[in-house]
Image 1 (cartoon, rainbow, N blue to C red):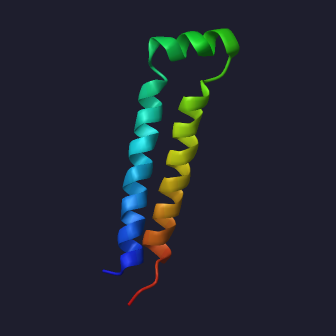
Image 2 (image 1 turned 180 degrees about the horizontal axis):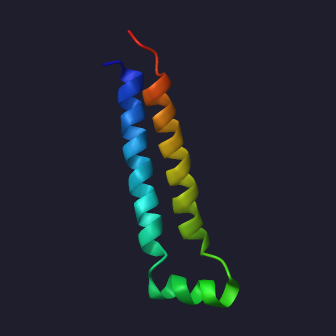
Length: 69
């Protein structure tokens, strides 16, 4: 397996883990109170979603379109 595809798998897995942590953070009491008062999630939760989504998409692209040897 090409190293670029291994990197893609690692990025995909890391992205899924970060998205899971972001999803779990939305259920915390502090997060729900902040969302109720301000109408949006905290910056930390948004970072989880953005970083997780970007890593997952980049990993998926590397796995699918990675250079074959």
